[in-house]
Length: 230
Image 1 (cartoon, rainbow, N blue to C red):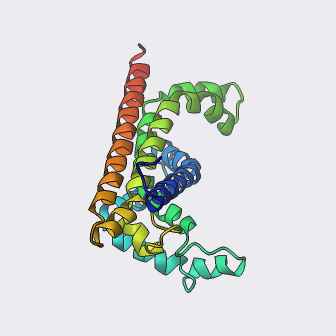
Image 2: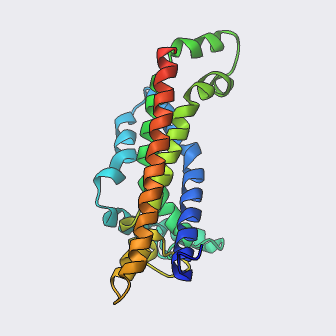
């Protein structure tokens, strides 16, 4: 891709890597939490719902700072992970963690709406035939909510690609290690003559975001058609 310089290509590759792993790792948790919020009634349900959506409300820098306090080498979880050789602070894995947490609310919301659109009687019918709850979910619920799962994953991927505040606070802006597209745009704008490189990365960011939105809208229409029975 001759249009982009080496530093820009590296930022693009790292952003795709971070967003891919952030989405992939968050997806099973997103499905579980969305199902719990949509189907189960338990003490603390509203607290869980609030915690899930907290990254949308808090300033991203605050979320990044909380991650640094928790997963930094001196943090409670970071210290435990460091003892087994896992360090996420100031690493690309930390960028994936931050991006995944910031994208998690969008993923959960899309999947939850899809689950709530499924008639619970269909799941109850499967249970009456002797199927376990897990089997009912795998054979009845999951195929019906798959478009919503895909839409949630796409939105999460796009959000992860654009995450800046939490990422730069948690893992800094290290070229080749933690410098994602938004961080690279910020870095290029701080140096004389960097506007051209920043503009190219902005164009790529817009293209990725628009593609994700179009895919999400397409999948959302499929969900609506399925619910309507057309």
